[in-house]
Amino acid sequence: MGRMSQQQFENFTASSLYCEKCKTAMPVRERLLLMLPDKEIYDYLCTGCAMSVGQREMTAGEKLMAQRNVARRPRRRAASHRIRL
Ligand SMILES: [Zn+2]
Image (cartoon, rainbow, N blue to C red; front, side, top):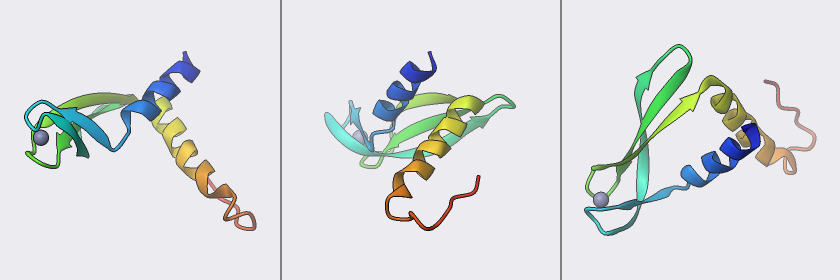
């Protein structure tokens, strides 16, 4: 389950989502909609018309995984610099 949701997460966080109003994939803006003790709900707004094009729940575990994914990327460039979490 963990691995599958990670893949979905990566797909979903693509910087563009289809907007019904603009009738095309538009860059989106992420907005924190609701913060709960165990999860956060984000709203994705089209940057063209500001309409909500999607929402996403991020659990505490997914958030942690996302942060690790981000931290993992610059590893090659920052080989001599250790990232502390
Ligand atoms: Zn739009």
